[in-house]
Length: 481
Image (cartoon, rainbow, N blue to C red; front, side):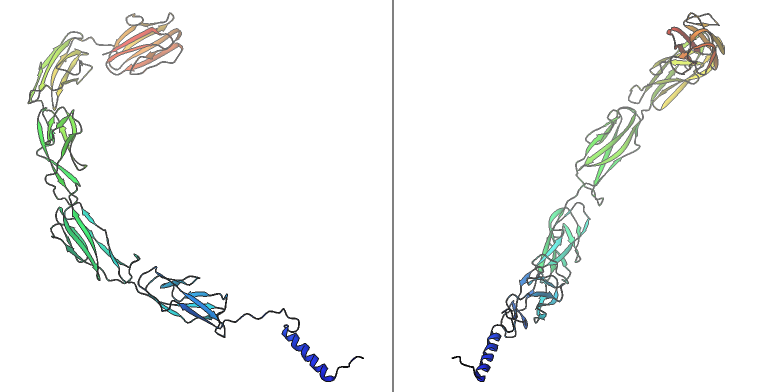
């Protein structure tokens, strides 16, 4: 027989069902629990607020997030912040790095909750004084150098706001002086003086060395820079100086001549003239040169020309001219000869102690003898010379010949004319041309069979020509007087 539940039993059954449902999450839930809520964040390390004395130094911070029951919230994300990143920075893992003098607040945050701040102080302390330059080497007496000094902490970073350095000198004081502001001045060649920079209790030392380095050389001599006689000498002296123009007494100097064919120079600076020309006399020391120009112009102390005058009365007659030129130490000087008017007189050779003057035309002109810085001349009068015509003619014809119409000469056709005279070539058949064999250049039309070609000669001389078609089978010569 089945038992019917009472009302009380039904109520108890319902309550039991409700309690069971609640225990299982109630109403069909997933069976999980809510994550703990961050109620506070605290920085746990370092134990005391750090104070940095050196830039770039670091301290590792750590923090913990807790719930309302003060239990640590596992897996909570912590973020870090520095209120003044110019003093110290903080990484995402809490590593704090000193950047500059001052104070900053370091905080940690999680889920919008921020920890109380930890004050970080950065106050650099001078660890070392560094000087610039670390040493001074002067190359001249009187030279100066401004020294500089900086205070740095143990990391080598400059200490902001540090006092300026005070400079002093230690040593005998004979080599260099140092002002309170750090200006070092070279006093004499030597070593032993040191500049000292002081900032607080720290110092830096700068050793000072003074030498003299050659910067310039002044070459001196007495009198004119021109030597007039071969074998004559001139003494040079050299003043060696540093960059402050202080004389460097006792410095060894070597001497040289740029043109030894003009002048030589001894190790003692004595220059000797050799031949006419120009040369640079150079003094060298320490890789530096000093230069002075020397000119050699030999002066003819003995100078004669004979004869003092002359006459030529025969056609193409000659006079012999003699010259003598010597300087004061009896050295022969080169002699040159020129004719003032080559249409009256020509000279050959143009150099030497003797020349031949040859009549070229009637008139009078001077033959000039030159040697060194002197010259003289002799007047030669020319008469009896045939007068050259100012025109001439040449036939160019069959048979491959040039024929002078004045004298009948053939291959070569020879014509004599005066200066300014004109030669006219007449073409009488065949294919020919006229072309010069030197200067001045004159050339007719190529392959010419008729007509004429003319050329005017304006200077004394002998001029050769041929046919460009037949070469040396057809030749001619024009003599201009």
